[in-house]
Length: 156
Image (cartoon, rainbow, N blue to C red):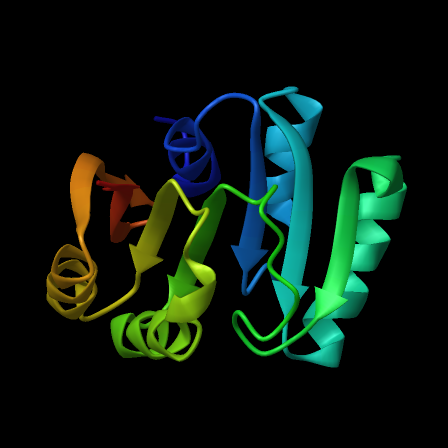
């Protein structure tokens, strides 16, 4: 794998509709849309700066018709049944668990959750396994001298 974004993209199933929680610059979504791996994306962040970055980058890549950008805290937005993949990358494990726990009633149609916890991976794994997800795939990579543990969980 060349880098973390490519590695994350490899864990997102083809033809998915993705909600990227904590999207930041929307680099993953842009990668997935430009490679035509996914049909549509929701870029979610709770801070104005990252939302503005996402808007700029999505527009710059002419992807506005393929992505909805939403300012929201975690899953605190209308999660529709078309969203089948959640990505929570670049967050701490405790934060990932908190986001999913707060919005777990919205996981009904979610088939996959892709995580990249920058710490406390074990907390994320234990929590998602207890929710009934199973580990489908995992990748350990080093990008820019940092080690990352990326995991795709599947809903049983």
